[in-house]
Length: 279
Ligand code: SF4
Image (cartoon, rainbow, N blue to C red; front, side, top):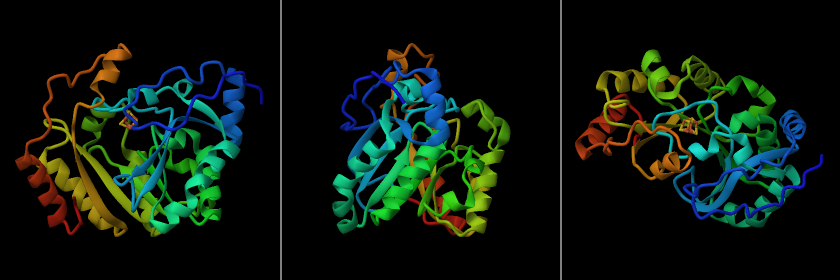
């Protein structure tokens, strides 16, 4: 595979760094063969030391590319694959190896987040397989839409799925993300059948995802699965707003405030009443 694109630094202080056009010089044919083989991925960045993206201290690989268009997305620069840095699997593995001992000592691991990691499922599975060989715990942070791209053997490389569940109501989900939630629900059921642990992530946005009835249906579904060991209710914030502006995208949540403490508590209560551990 040929590319003349220089390799910018992979490490970022936080995923809120705006990154654009880093893979722009990569020919389309190279992108296609990279996706097919998984020998190269497109990464927004690597961040280290995170404690909110899975158990223990994590290295997080943020992938580029997402097929959803969530109104509240904090990282719209990850929507486009060409905004990512082209990284060979060898380079990504080498990067991870630097941290592997420390991650083991701190009971942490590797989390692959995005964007939507399963846009690059082959690359992600290869990276997880390499991590497992090093004895590093693996977590996939995904909206689950492309869950059926993962074979049962692929799932063996994943210790935990952090499933980004947006909302239960199908129509509201389409308004919020532009996409259908049935594949996400299906993927969650498949993980449950395999007893693969899920941490459910639920972004709480006033007037969009805080409807108690809708939260109740999500909670009942999650509790019924039997493999959801934790729910994280993530209050909406405006940290990604400047990215929408810089990218010239229309941001519809300009005037949306973070949820009040009362609404956060009410939502946590709904998940807890369903028998789930919610934070
Ligand atoms: S699924 Fe995640 S990355 Fe994709 S648009 Fe939604 S919030 Fe953004």
